[in-house]
Image (cartoon, rainbow, N blue to C red; front, side, top):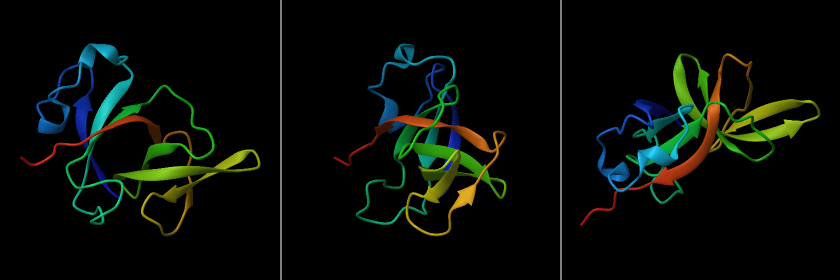
Amino acid sequence: MRVNYLGPAVVGVEHPAVAEMDSRKFSPSCFLVEISEDARPGGPWMEGDVLVVDEARSFGHADLVVAEVEGEYRLFKSHRVGSRCRLLPADGGQGYFVNAQQFKGVVLRQARCWAV
């Protein structure tokens, strides 16, 4: 699933989903991404959800991570395979082995803007 880069978390990005978030609680290594229109209805992620990603954190088994694949930031679940880690698309599909340059960070938090 594609995600769109919004900017550093400590800057205070203008987005309805993060209006209540205290950006001072995040380290300078954190950034925000927004779930794209690729999200499936009824799933754990909806279009417009914002994820806080820490690029300084190492990923482990079953972490939610962001990586750059084919020139786009995408959301994956990590799966340890011996000493390597395979990234499986969060919404299903073909997995990838990525290098350190492609790995962008581990998701720390999800924020959603509910319609009123």
